[in-house]
Length: 510
Ligand code: SF4
Image (cartoon, rainbow, N blue to C red):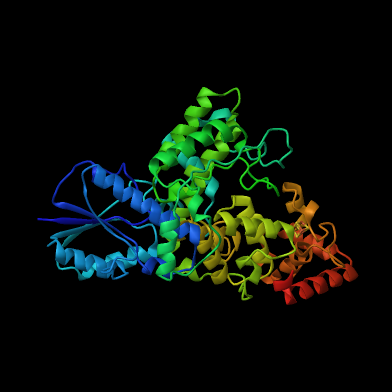
C-alpha cells in the first residue's frame, strides 16, 4: 500500500507529526502550479518567496530521508492544477491512499474536498498543527453574536494558554497596554536595519518569466532578502527579540519617510507559510523578556503577543465562521474603482507615495501603513471592496486569503458592517501627521480642508461621513463625528463637500 501526502505552499511546517517516521511507502508531493498564479495577480516577490521556500522545504525533507516528488512550474508533464497533477501521480505510483492537511484558504478547502469525493481510493485529512485554535473555535466562542469582540477572545486566550497571567489576573494588572504604546517616533532610540538575507533567485525569476506568469511589483532577484527556510525564520525571530522588541510596542503605529519597518519583526511570511509556529514565537518573546527586563517592558511584550495569540488567531476564526458569504460583503455599497496609482505608487500624496511605493518595492508594509494610510484612502474614496481585496491579496508577501480578507474587507473597509471592527477605520490628515513625518514632505497641506493644495484626506473624511449617514449615524462609536459635522458652518460644509467631489472626480491624478 502506498500513501500520497500533499503539502501546500503555505504548509511548510517541518515539525509536523507527518515527518516523524520515514517510510518508503509514503510519498510527499509539492507542486508549483499556474492555478495558484491565476486566482489573483501576485507581487513578483510573493511568487518567488513561495517557490523558493517550497523548494527548500522539499530539499530538507529529501535530505532527511523522505520520498518527495517536486513538480516545478516548467516541468513538461505539469498539468498546472492540483487535481490533474494528483491524478497522474496516483496513477504513476499506484497510490492506494491520499492525505492532505487542512487548507487555510476556503477556495482550496473546497477544491480538495471535491477532489476527495471523486476519488476511488481511501483518503484522509490532518490538521496543520500550526494555529492555537481549531478552525471553528472562534465561531463557537462567540455563538450567535452579531459582532465579534477581539478583546474578549484575547483575554480568554491569555487565560487558556496561561500567558502573561498571575493566577486569574493579567500580569501587570491590565490586559492591554495600548495607552503606553503607539507613540510617534521621536528619534530618541536608534533605528536598526531590518534583518535580510542574500538569496540569488535570478534563475527562478527567469523561469516564471519564461512561463509567462503575470505579476506586478519590483524585485532585485539576485539579492532577495526574505527568510526562505526555517533556519532563517528562527534567525529573524531572534533578531526581533534581541534588537527590536525593546521598542516594538512604543513605536508600533509610527511611520517614517526614511525607514520601512521601524521595530516590526517582519516574520509574517515565515509564519504564514508555517516555517515557524505562533507557540514558539510567543515562547521566544516571553523568554527574551524574562532575560532582559531592564530593557524590555511588559508593554512591548503584551503588544506583540496580542498580535500573535489575539488578532491573528481571531481573524482566522472569523474567516472560517463567515466564509464564503464574507467574500461578497459590501455594507457601504462602495463601487468606485481603486485609484490607478495603487499599481505604481505615482501620487503626489506623500504618505501614499511612500506606503504604496514601499509595498510595491518590498511586498510588505506594516499594519498602520496598510490600515491607516492605504486602506483608509481606499475606503474614503469609496473603492469597491473586490478591487481592494485583489490589491491586498496580491501585493503582500504574507497575504493568504484567511488573513487578508478579514483584515481588508472586514477591519479596514468595514464592508462587513461591523463583525470585526465596531467602527470604520477612517482618519483625516491629522492622524497621519501625528503618527509620521510624511506630511512634512508633502505637496499637499495637511492643515487645509479645502482650497489650493488642501490634503485630500480631509475633505474626503467628511464626505465619507456625509455620504454614509444612513448606515453609520446610529453607530454609538461614530456619533461624535456627526455632531462635529452638523455643527460646522453651512458654507464650510459646502466648500468641504465641493472639494471632496472635485478630488473624487480626478482621483487618479491626485
Ligand atoms: Fe498624506 Fe495629506 Fe499628509 Fe500629504 S498632507 S502626507 S496627503 S496626510
